[in-house]
Length: 608
Image (tube, rainbow, N blue to C red; front, side, top):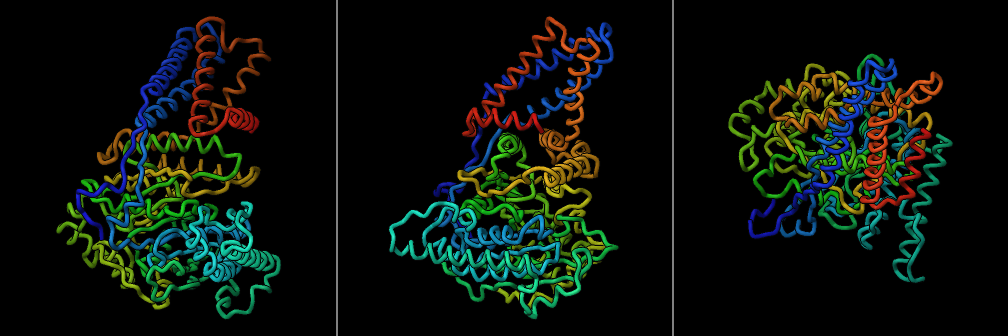
């Protein structure tokens, strides 16, 4: 419950980063590109096919730069003030945290465990948090690792909160050298905690090499005779915070789930897993807000949940119109500087329009929005309008939209009406949760169509984001320092190629499915520049003209033909290249990177 007093300072403010100098540079580069195209057209008849190919490639570059300029025209971000939250909010809302994983080989359980431990230790009342781990690989090793991690969490979480640690993922925290007075209380706690973490790592590592070390626990019988793509629904309450009151020594709920999979059924990849997480959490804890974090991205900022709540709980004119809060994806790898720079500037640019795009991790969602609610169906105070109450809460509408589970329908009604979620015993909901995990549960429902994470694309994040913005919702972008979440990128080779292919395939699917930003022309609630931003992000086929353009100089040398004749065309090209280099260098340096890192990243990108 929040205090609506207008005399109190706001929980957040929107900061604009408009720069007329950058706008002038963007327009100058755009003008030079159009000048080059005009020069090509005027002298096309005097040159061969090479100029035509160059013209087509340069037209593509100009179009992409136009989209990029439009997207970055009015950059902005949101600055929260979590220190003010206690003054304004007497009872913080609950948050369900989702960590999906799919393969214990590509995503080692110890990495998943560190992500979970970092989330359990955030600065937020433990009785208001629940962590759900979705294992699409149905791995007993992942479940075993979570059980062992739940034991270590009873040491790690109080240790983090007692000493207010900055880094709350153990594998990163213990990389730093120990700095404390020998014999002090902190020194003793530090050594004991590190010792226990090393024991945890050894247990997980030994169990990875020898499955017999998983033990003969009766709970592991559910994993017998199972395959990653052929098994029944498995739901295990790893740890339950019974009767929690938010004490610093408490550990939030930990739940392991693995949805049913059968060879002859579509499972919709990550989107299907996220929708199952939404249903199970709705039956067990039914928190009004949900956080999804990739299993390789740990919480790097202890106040990240409080920062997001500043946006959702602010009493303002547009308080009910924020559907989700997105934190940028940042990495601790040294080979992702360019990606971080691009995401930073594009993220701020899109945030200045209708709000950032959901990037699939580090995103706080409103459960009501994910259940298909639109801003038009709300009153000024955030409650359902009378028309929406009649239409959305009708029994036929609920069963056809959310499925035939009575418990699921009840939880949906409570979520839509913002009723407080009671502290139920989690194990009492397991039977109902298993029912909503069956392969055929979503058949003839709206899951994946208008409810939850949307299907029809491997990029479920962008697909869902377009659907939310098309209903008239906005979103917020928070980029704190230090970063809220940090992760790792594939080092290269096959893994990197698979990930890039997945992103590219998903973007193309979004571009041509029913959520396409091109079709958004017929949706008035999706702003024009927001459609342009989605189009800019979706176009990934520009690599083809880039490859062709790189090969043109070699072809011209072999055939003794001119690609850039002397005169105006050559001058425009050299000016474009120089301005673009200085432009990217400026972007790097503004984010705190050195000239050496810019040169290194440029060299590596060319080698790739």
